[in-house]
Length: 108
Length: 319
View: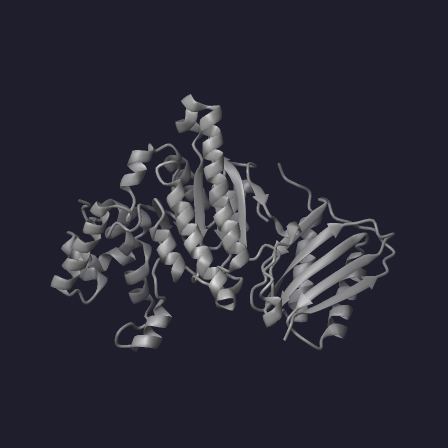
């Protein structure tokens, strides 16, 4: 019944990080999630924390987050996710969307 | 998130809570208080296995409109229908208390300039009322918010801003009614019992919640504007809400007091007159009332754009 808290750690060769010290995007709506990126010196690693009501998808979370880290080459960040039944493809899309916004040049 | 310039031209209805909060303030002035990084989540939801949100579904903060500090509460309808629990309720109450403290501090520091520096509060409602997962704490929050609104009365204006998908229903309908000024766009809806709940309890003959036109005629902004439950009807553009708030910030407090719906014997009598009228004429539809107040062709009103509507509409005359 209680919420599930998952923690992962990924090795990363690259160290593409985000522009601000932290960045937040999204809403924990039904079938959706919110994500927060926090800059942190982890020697290139990526830490991920997921809070979700869905039980039994630990391996799917791990492979989806791993794919995100490998595809984008991020490093030295903490990823925190509040999930409410988002499907894997929604998770991937939201992560890419958030990273695109967090690395975009600020317009004046 | 969109830049402020883009937000000013964007739809208020489509915007999320944070975009609305930023867009209602002057450019670059909004500072969020208790932002997602503070992780002020509800402690009750994890126990029940319900997903949590870093800001508990409500964005709070402060910005400026001209010289006036604008305190903002903005609710996110996508997170548990924008329902109010212990944490986001407390965020709301304390934003109001902070605004009152700011008003007192400004009065002390600039006694001659209070009118031009007077704070203002904007609450962007998108909620169905109490969050049933934490019902007692949620109900208490409603009472505390109303208390805080009353404390600010005649000192600074509290503005209800309604124009999002969920509308403003349940206990928060009472709270919106207790504010000084109500600003809505055409899509905005205010009510107590939501359409689905009326249908569920009283049957489809009483109220057909699938009839969108009927729902909007009964709870929507145009009806509220005609019967004077809504003070300003604006286009669905965040920039228009921003401009309207800037306008309200400059209105003297005795004029603000006249915009209220509840809170004095005179207003109670005004409401009772309305109840008496409805009892006598037994309207079958909101349009009967629109006709009574002098709109010759009430059926044409829902089809009009906000601009056309504002040109021709006849409203209830307040005593």
